[in-house]
Length: 68
Image 1 (cartoon, rainbow, N blue to C red):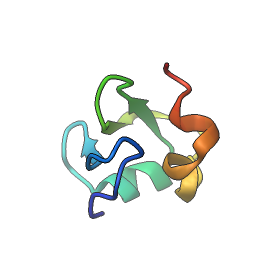
Image 2 (image 1 turned 90 degrees about the horizontal axis):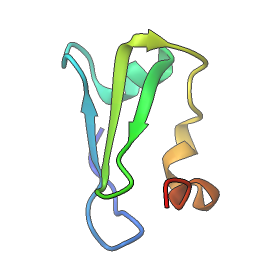
Image 3 (image 1 turned 180 degrees about the vertical axis):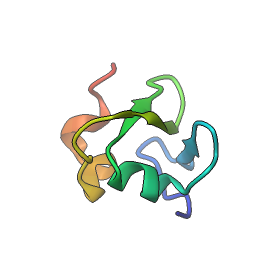
């Protein structure tokens, strides 16, 4: 998945812990999504599973300031 524009003008960085799949595969399988409120990094941990996050979850304005 290519980085997209972040709300603060920077680029978002999508990482997968362990790196054995793409971020989108990890998200679709219900991997734990970890957002760093101080940077534009969003990580997915495939070893912790839950309900998959919606595809547009990372562009939702209600969630952009959740960690602030």
